[in-house]
Image (tube, rainbow, N blue to C red; front, side):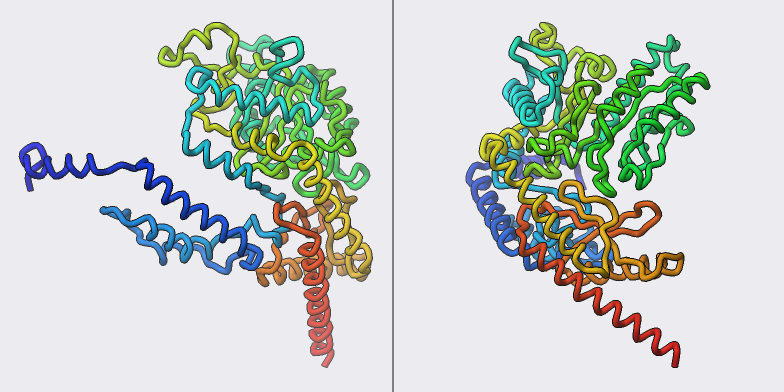
Length: 523
């Protein structure tokens, strides 16, 4: 076969075909989006009836969809048909009101609309000049949220007196927030210790409680810290599994005495396993003795702090260097949206800034703007600020607080139901909207603990197989524990009570089966 260069007829046909292809034809955009919106509408109307956890096996989708990319075009309806018939049945439905696993991934009509519009605009806001409105709306949304959280003015982009020293940036995940602050703290510690380049990197030490999210320890490795100098400080029931400042001081002092440089401490407000809250102010006081950077991970529970009754969990935040929280977990804003605030943006941009010739412009050179590319790992960035702004602009503080309080009230209802049934026990005090419980051991010995763990595991597995509820687990103090996390955007009290009835019924069946097994063994 000849090439297009030697076949004028083929080239003409190719050129005509290219001219006919209009991927952003306005009529197609309207048609496709109408069909997509209808799909979303139907999905939200029916998701409650769908199995929360799909009954599929690994590789199922490869058997339903063609393995090779299509060589020719097809009507959009074909893709929608395959979405309904092949993809949806394999989805774990995080939007289901019967989803109680992990932490919620909340959403709202305003957030979805914001995400849709941002995707349509498809702006790449690496510098202010590349996207003035996108940059300034992100800054405004962050400052609004900072005010709802009652963060100190030092964390805001704009203050009553003009531009502040601190500021924020919207990232994808908490992992990114940890990584960029670790890098900044690393560089500051190297300068402080007089290191020649990275020669002193092996002397830097970082600290967190053993309940801190595993992403912290991953980010430490990515930032180049020696794994031998990553301190995971044990916690226990005496502090409800929160970081003990006295233990932190002991470990940091021992490292300093050994010639290491305490560099970074991560405190958590709402740990993943049990929602433990590290004492922010006390941790900051300890870290200050060593001039170490303090970061607060408030990914989940930070949203609750817009309510005055929960704000005390952030007491002392004015003495930390950075704080991050994720509205995509509990503040009605769809993934991905993690808000990072730093007290001094220059410490962050000093480590992350890039200034290639093709991005230079008068606005950046003036110093009047912060190019958000210099507060993240990559250069390109999405218009995440629009959906966060739309959520706050549409619902206002009152509705957002009502949403948080409703979830907490439902979690308390579930906690009361668990405490009222002597077959179960609440393992740690409830914080926010998470209840950690298990089947109560019949005897306070090793055999009793083993029996309780077996029953709790079986309970979780049976519940999840029904498709009528989805729970996850953790291990706290060596005990296998079920986590019941309230907060899915469609959840109502009836869903919580329905889940509890299913838990009771399933437990009764498990106990009856265990008794039958014992009887058979005796015979």
